[in-house]
Length: 214
Figure 1: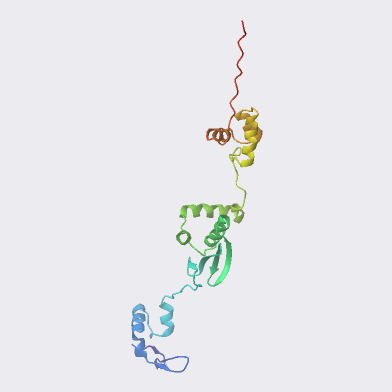
Figure 2: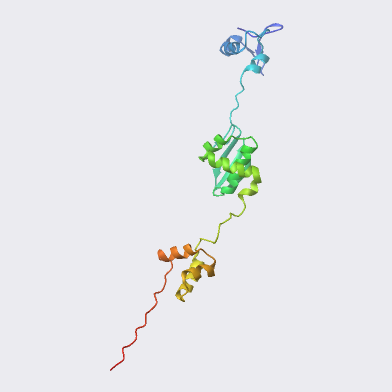
């Protein structure tokens, strides 16, 4: 079926001015004709075809960029992760910078650029974890990922420096509970270090009384 306008038979022209035979467009026109409802009056025209035909948007990225959506992608390069909108780099962070990764992925989601499922699939993370990040991001903004983590109670980390001080106190006869108190660390931390041999409690020598000679 040739496309008709108000002036009769339609003929298309390329930029070089060469007429395109409408017969070569028949497969396309047949598909377009099926999409047009018979209830809509009027001749079939290019304007009506492009109004009803779904528009396909292909992703445009550099080679090596992993698409998250048709617009957003990322690339790992030289120890960094670079994010793109099309061919334009928009953000980057070190591969092991988890806080910045959480920030940018939450921004993508909250701004409506990317869905949670798309983020989870692209980076291999669980959607439940992403939902927790988004909740924190909505409540406090990006700073929520950069605040020092709160620790409960006393420190449970026995660094080499602290261990050396603890061993010195133990060598002088100070008990485990007192060592923990003096160094501001947990009692269980010192006890476990003694149990696995990282700290050693010196055994007290028992003095023997010489028997009086008769």
